[in-house]
Length: 165
Image (cartoon, rainbow, N blue to C red; front, side):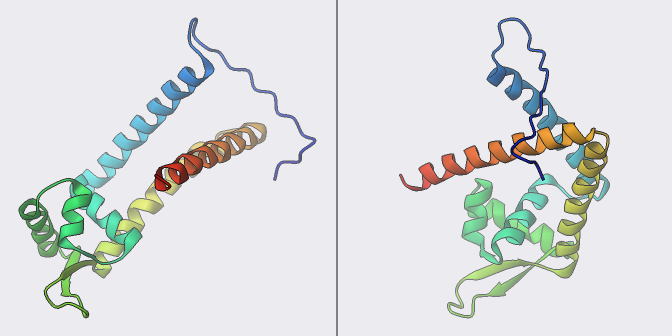
């Protein structure tokens, strides 16, 4: 944990004419693009499409959800979402169940196999990030932690502002 009396000095090289914010956006964009590519490669190795992963992550986070909500979240019509879920059911990643309160509503939930895939993808991402962080010095890790916490806090403030609209 960082002590308030501890000051970490970081030297940053910024390209001429580029603000710190622009340099941060460029660096963060590069890191995110690289991680997205590595994540897509892991999904491909497991023969899971990015659309399947997206649906599984939504369900993992929010719990069973109706087909109409899945369609909304993936930005498609109900027939497209239904086709996607059909393929996921065939692969044993999700199952359909009727809502106990309204039998007309079909809920989609993760199967054990689907939950295991989500866990493995999260764990693989964690291992990759842990390996990268382990290559940083102690002061670099401390500085990164402060920066990430500040960024997370700023994003939370933005999200709260969007929710109050």
